[in-house]
Amino acid sequence: MNLLDRYIALTVLKGVGIATAILLSVGTLIEFMGQLPDVGIAQYDIEDALVYVALRLPRLLFQLLPAATLIGALFSLGNLAAHRELVVMGSSGISKLRLIRSVSIAGFVLLVIMAGLGDSVAPSMSAYAREFRATALLDSDTVANGPSMWLKDGNRIVNFHREANGIGFGGVYLFEIDDNEGLVQIAHADTADIDQDNKWLLSNYAETVFQGPNGVEAYTEQYIAKDFNLSPELLDLSVVRHDLLDTDGLKRYISYLESNGLDSTQHLLAYWARMADIVSVFFMSILALPFVFGGLRSAGTGTRLLVGLLIGLGYYVMSETFANSGQVFELDPFIVAWLPSAILLFITMLVFLRVR
Image 1 (tube, one colour):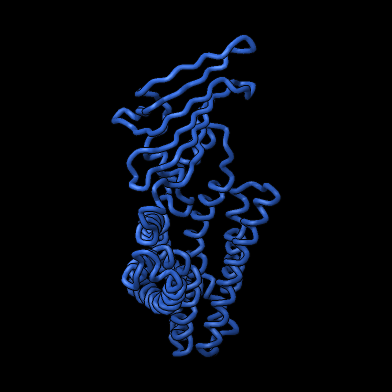
Image 2: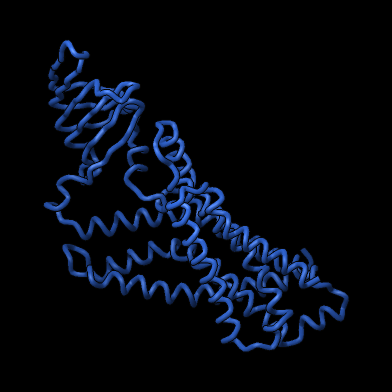
């Protein structure tokens, strides 16, 4: 990377940094205002709301960075054009394709940042924020039992309540079906825990086995160990939304759903949409070039801001529209998630043709 590449890349990154700070400030204020109605409930106070919003910042940054990249690139490259620095570069024999390479360096840096945020930082911090907020909002009477959960393990279907302290389970029901979906066994336990070998330790266990049309066998045990192949980590995955799973956890949960014949469409869409959002920031940086060389060369700051916001909003609306349509019409999650980025790539290719 020579001096020119470094200068242009740093100029773009500086503009993106300023745009990100502005958008993030507005987004943070809106997020904080949304928490005010809950302040005063149980132990949730202003300090807790501020901590919650702070923990949500990586998620907010991940959502805003594509639009901030386009706006920041428009600002920084537009300033270079307004001060005729791009004209001087062109007079010195530097082609517009050469400038694209320099801008691409900044785009790649932003892509790496997006990948780090989307892969683990934003999901893990958002999950912790959700847990932090719930702990402050719910009192002990309200959380005597956690939410009811249903999990499928081969031919077994398990229903249980997660205890509020995260240790053990209550009200466990077990249903086992045969290959023809006929009911083979029903079991219940008052409480359950998981040992180091991932075996379930059940108390006050009662089991009923259906032995065809000729009989039923029932027995009880005060304590019994069962192996359901459901580790605490997998149970943790099952109770959070896909946007609160890191990329590795999301892939493992998709694999779990598919191996048990469950619908993984929503999680597949979330996975590919996350990948597409990461790549989109690279195209957003290059997309600013035709406006700098074209109609926005001498435009004011407000005009560039408006163009950047409109394109960023358009990309967001397009992504949401395709995602909702994909679920309604049962389209392939890969195609649905990547279609907005494919359109952005097509526009970027037109950019290359235009600046040649």
